[in-house]
Amino acid sequence: MPGGEETAGERAAAKKATPARKASAAGTASGRDAAPAGKGGSTDKGAGRGKKATASAKKAASAKKATTSAKKSGSGKKAAAPAKKAGSAKKATTPAKKATTPAMKPASGKKPESAKKPASAKKATALIKKAPAPTKPLVAPKKATAAVPAAPAKPVFRPAREESCTALVRRARRINRELAKVYPYAHTELDFENPFQLLVATVLSAQTTDLRVNQTTPALFARYPTPEDLAAANPEEVEEILRPTGFFRAKTKAVMGLSKALVEDFGGEVPDRLEDLVKLPGVGRKTAFVVLGNAFGQPGITVDTHFKRLVHRWQWTAETDPDKIEAAVGALFPKSEWTDLSHRVIWHGRRICHARKPACGACPIAHLCPAYGEGETDPEKARKLLKYEKAGLPGQRLKPPQAYLDAGGKPAPPLGAG
Image 1 (cartoon, rainbow, N blue to C red):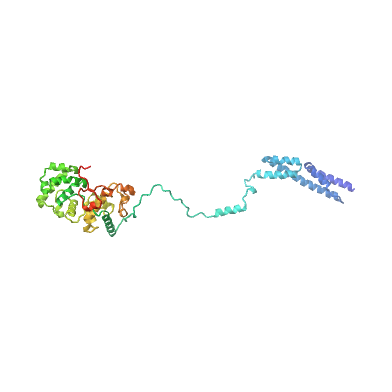
Image 2: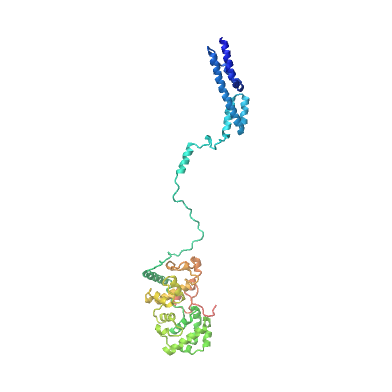
């Protein structure tokens, strides 16, 4: 019978869908009510209901798995509650999946798809990686750690290690011309009225200053005005007069000896030849050139301690012997310049280019000096190192030439004056 076959098919399908009915009773009932009627439809209806029941069973199984994983991640508990209340596996599955997605961590350690960078970010990263590094990295300039020393008014001159003779001559003569502008009144700084007084004063100037000699000789020449008087003097009296100059015993012997030689050999007159002067006791080439140049007007180079120091600083010569220095420097200048050159160099050494601390910052020839920087380069500090008329102080002569006084020079005070 048609009714009997239909009932048997339904029973067979029901046996197969038993697990599905247990998982979702409502789904099975709705499927039974919605089955269409027709011929031969009992077998088809049963098969259709079986397929739907199988699909529902699969959904229920996936919901169960999702619920289990949600419990493990901690967020599944919240998602499982609405699923039980609604009684629908489909509604419970959707929020559970959404809740578990961010909490799940893949076992392989790979980042989930949602964590991956967008395509635009990948392109930007690739462009940054491909950008070439600058070939010359910028380096910040170092901060100044010390004050820059004050430079002279003109560029500092630095001669080459192997300066040619022509270049040396030009540089030396240029220095001489500059010194002539600075010291147009340069002269010997020993007071004298005749060649004899100049000869004695020059011998006494050894190991002391010209000022000290100038303060001592007035009393000596007032008592012994001629070579004959000094040659016949009492040595003890002469020593007492010469005591302020230092080494007074040796100097007494020297001036009395040369006075006696002048009387005996030259009739009491000072000779005007170099070879005769150097024969006198205590007279060398330096003393002879001072007398010849300033008393007789014969050119000569005076190599004293100041002259020797400055020609070494200026690199005019490397010689150390006074006679060799005289020859080397004399070859750089015409003979007519020798006496005035000596005065200018000695004056510069006494006033500006001192032995211990030269006043480089106040030097008018700093731009020509290879030794610039050995002394004080700050202009204000260098001016405090100046001496004599450059510092507004008296010179070394008690009776200086009128040209010196006209230029602003001041005469030195006599011995014992405050």
